[in-house]
Length: 390
Image (cartoon, rainbow, N blue to C red; front, side, top):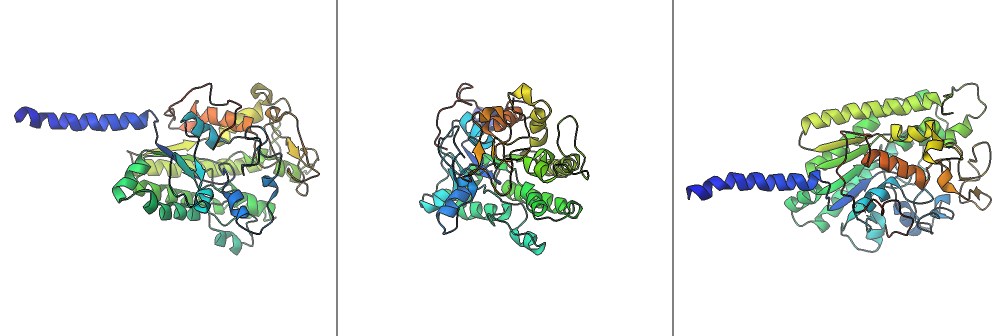
C-alpha cells in the first residue's frame, strides 16, 4: 500500500507534464477566432446572403481569385493569416459562425470563426453617439463574445467540458480595434479627436481576454494594429497635402503610424498586467505592426516588385485606390500578378503579404513571448497553391 500511495503524486505529476507538453507543442484541438476583416472567412458574406441588402464590393470577383478561385467573403485575393495558422495545424474545416447558424450545425469541430468585416472593438452605440455609423455590421467584439457564450451550451455538456474545450484551443482575439479608428477617420472626424478612444478600445479587448480566461482559455493570441500610416486609403486621401509628413524610407504617413504605435504600446502594457494576474495562461502579443513594416521598408526583398503601397485591385489614381470605384466594381482593374503587390484593395493586404506576417509571427520572432508552439503538418503544405475548404 505504501508503494501504491507514494506513486500517486508521481502519476499526477506525469499527467500534468503530459498535458503541459501537449499544449506546449501546440497540438491544439481547435481554433476559436474573433476579429474584423483581417480574419473574417465568410461571416459578413453569410449575413448579407440572409438579408435583402445590396452586397458590398468585397463579395465580387476578383476577391478570392488566387487561392480559392471564388469569392469566399475574405477581403483579399486569397488566404489570411488565420488560414495559414489553420493549415499548419491541419484544420481545414474551421467554419464561420454565421454559416454554422444558417445551416443549423452548431458544433465547434476543428474551429469556429466569429470575426466580421468592419467589426469594431467598441459597441456600435459608442460610435453612433460620436456621429459615426458602421457601414457593414454591428458585430462588435462584445457581440462576437456574446455569440460564443450563447453557443457554448450546445457544444459542451458541462462547465468542466467547456473549460477543457477552451484549455485545448488556440484562441485569437483580433486583430480588432483598427476599425474603431478607421471608421471615424474616413467619416471626417479630426484625427486629434480620436486619440481618446484608444484606452477605451484597449479596455474592451482586455475585458474580452479576461472573460475567455474565466471560461478556461489557456492560449490566447492578441494581435496589435497594422501600420495604418502605410494604408493606401490614407495615402490617397492625403496625397499631395503639405499638412502631413511622410517617412522617406517607406512613403508612409508618420503621424498615423505613431497613432498605431500608441495603440500597440497601451495594448502590450495591458497584456503584461493580465500575465501578472494569470501566470499560468499563455497570453501572446502578435506584433502585426513590425511584421508588416518589414515589407514596407524593403518590398523587393519579399518579392513585392510592384511595391508595398500601390493597390493591386482598384479604381486608378496614384496608388490605384478610388473611394468611388473600389475593387470588385465593374470599372475597377486588377493586376495580373498579385503576389508582386503587398496591398490588395487599398484597405487590405494580398495573400502574399499575409503569408509574410504569418511566417514572422508563428515561425519567427514577432510575438511576445515568442510563440513557436504550432505543430506543423508539413512545411510544404503551408503556402501551397491548391484549394482549401476553410
